[in-house]
Structures are given as C-alpha cells and as structure tokens.
Image 1: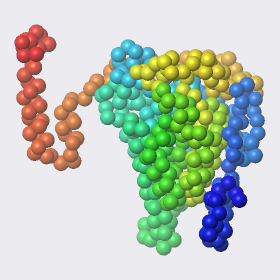
Image 2 (image 1 turned 60 degrees about the vertical axis):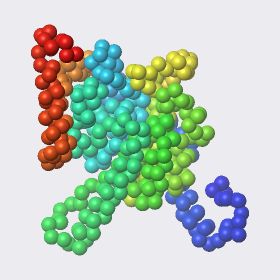
Image 3 (image 1 turned 90 degrees about the vertical axis):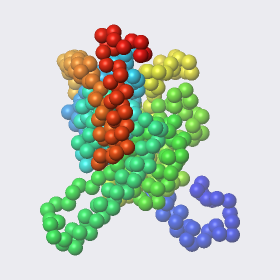
Length: 415
C-alpha cells in the first residue's frame, strides 16, 4: 500500500481509483523530494539532477547582476529602516536575510508574468523595475499604493495576510482563458488576428509561513489545482510569523502540502540565489506550458524584526540569529564570484558607491513626498459624481474652514 492510499475499503483497488492515483503520482514525480541547494554557505557549487541544467544558463554577467540586486535592496532596506526611525515613515517592513529568495525568484519571471506580493517583497519590486522611492509612499502614508501595477505587472502591496492569494489564482484563471480564446481565434482565422502569438504568461504570488495557515491559501490552492491555473505559489518561510515559530505553523515541510492538492511542491534553500532562480524558472515554465500550479517553499530567515514596531529579542535567541547570519545570501555569492574570478574588489567597491547614491535618492524623494489634498479621496470614491459624496465634501470643507489661522495662533480657543 503506497503512502497516498487510505486504509483498505470495498472501493480500494477499483480501476478508476488506481488510474486517477497513478496519474496524480506521475504528475508529481518531477521535482526532487529533498531541499534543493546548489550554492552552499561556503561558496562552493553543488549539483542537482534537475536544476543544475537551469543554473548552467547563468553566465558571469547575470550572476554579478544577482549580487548587485541583492546589495542594492539591502542598502535600500537599511535606509528605509533609518527613515522610519527618524519619523519619516509610519512603519517599515525589513527584508534583510531574504534577498536571495526575492531576487532569485523575481529575476526568473518574464515581463508578461504578473506578480502578487505581500508587503515585504521589496527585492521582487526591484526586479520588476518599480521605482523604490514609490515603494515608500504607502509606508509614509501619502498614497494607497505608490505605483501603477499596469506599468510593471507587479501588483500593489497587500497588508491583509494571504488576501492576495485568491486574487492571484483568479488572475491566473483569467490569463488561462484569455490565452485559450486567443488561440481558438487564431486557429479559426478570425479577422485581425495575425502575426506571432503573444508569449504565454503565468502568475506568481508571494506569502509567508505564517500566512500559509490562513484559509485563503487553502482555498486558493484548491481552485488552482481544480482549474489547472498557471500560478506559482512562492512561500518565503522565514521561520517566524511575527513571534510564532514555523514549528507551530506546521509539523512537516510546507512544500509537502502541495501533494494534497495534486500539484508539485519544491523546497529550496532560500539563501541560495542560484537555486532559487533555477527552481522558480522551472516552476514558471511548468505553469506557462499548461501543466498547472507549483508551490515553492524558500527556506530562509528573517534576520531583523518583523516590522519596525517589533522587537525580535523578546521571542528568539540571539544565537539563532547568529547561526543564520553565517548563511548570509550575499556572503556566499561573493565567495563564489571571487573564487571563480567573476568579480574583484573594484566591482564590490563600485556597488557600495552605487548603494550610497541610491540611499541619497531615497532620502531626497521621501522628504519631498507630501500628502495629497484630502479632497482627492472624495473625488476618487466613485467613477461619476455622487450627491452624497458631494454633501460630505461640503461638510468637510466647512469643518476645515473653522481651523483657519490657527497656525498663527488664532482660534486656539476652538481646540
């Protein structure tokens, strides 16, 4: 009796039951069962029967680009944290320690793919050409978003845990149907349909180990599997859902959950940017080719706080943090680049200077980022003018007029 069988019943062993199970197990047999790692903490390259082929596609320029991205987003993260401490941001969500998971996966996506982030995917935003200064507008409280998702196929941040996963599956199902319709029209020779077909697209949605316990994730995976949606679920297992350890979230690797839904699950060393890129490239190809969803669990670590409102020293040992710092994603890639003669001191010094320039740009842009006139909130409530909104705006303007001149000391008695 295989691991996927239930205890024997009068229905066990029927032809249909065996056939369906055989099909499901065949579909799940491609990825390896153990964690995928190519670049170890000491900077030496290993091999993998499936994913070494993908890693071989990366030349020195791309690997240097991976390092440059990780260095830039770490410098950005440091500057954003400083801005919050100085009162320029209401809150900040650090990503230090998770750079490889984000840069590796983001760089594996293609322009036509659509990305749904949570609120910590600053590195993925970088790979999708989002202006990092715009990324801070929501945390400064001057925008509900900060950028136009249509420009980059990178959705706005979602602050409600796991709420983006149903959206991602729905979007993927829409892509699936649009592609089928376009192909049918092409085969029918519909008027105006000529030239090469549009490249196939997939959706990738990010969430954390804590969000994996939300019902939204379960429901999303049920729908994705049932409709064979072209979506990659990317779980960054950073070991801590604020103060709750992963061991409380699950008794088995999170990637194993995928088998229960009937699609592949892969666990990858989330601090190995090369392995993350290889696994994500495979998963997105799998989804684009119509083979259905994939779950990736990137095994990584949040070195800093959950947010700047959090104090991780209250719930975890400093020795744990020190252990993970030895697995630093930037350090291991630097060792490899130096050992292989792909980068030298001048390269790393140049990146440090570029990081300082980025930090200066972020500071300048943040200081200049003022809150919009609140009247725009009334104007944007509905597409067309609404009498109730107009009435509320009139009340607000009358109310605001009562505070006129208080900056000069007038009307203090009305406070």
